[in-house]
Amino acid sequence: MANDCLFKGLSNSFNQEQFPDMPAGLRICNTQTITLKRKFSSTISYYYSIQEEYRNTCKAQVKRQAEIAGADVARLNLDEIIGSKTDIFLQTVLPDYDVTHHFLHEVKKRHESFLKMERTIEDLRDLFFDLALIVQVDYALIDRIDKHSNAVDRLVREGRGSTYRYKTAVKMTKFIKKFMDSA
Picture 1: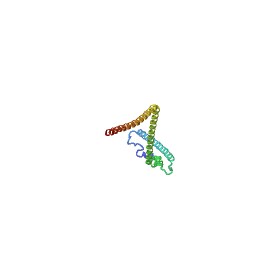
Picture 2 (picture 1 turned 135 degrees about the vertical axis):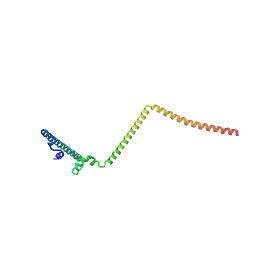
Picture 3 (picture 1 turned 120 degrees about the vertical axis):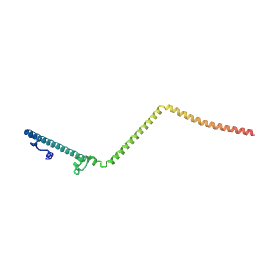
Picture 4 (picture 1 turned 45 degrees about the horizontal axis):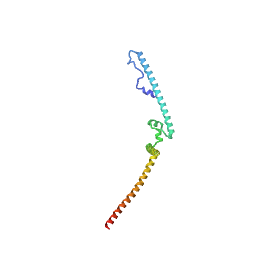
């Protein structure tokens, strides 16, 4: 057995040279040594069995992951996969991880720009809503301002006409005075 190899360096029994005066002590030491070796051997065997059980459980999980990922289970070396601790999903589903990660980053950037655009549109909607509220509340004031601006526009036009007639009348008066003074 593999456990027996562990004990080759240990002596199987104590010799009488180590305990010359105590043959009973020698037998007790030999018995204790043998008992401890057997207990150690059974503990190591139990450890190996638990380790093997764990390895088989890991193999079953990896095999199930490979089946879910769509990998060819017959071609996979499960011991190698368990030893390298690689993720079966990354091997089969995402062979081009960098490309996929880049596309994910692009999608996130587009999503952020759409969210920013949505906020801008909401701000514009709020602005127009506020303007509509102002127009509704201050309609009479805006109407009065509009009437006054129209009146001012009419008066400005009349003033320009009056100014033009005045300038023309002044020119005519000067012309008539010159004409009368020269005649």
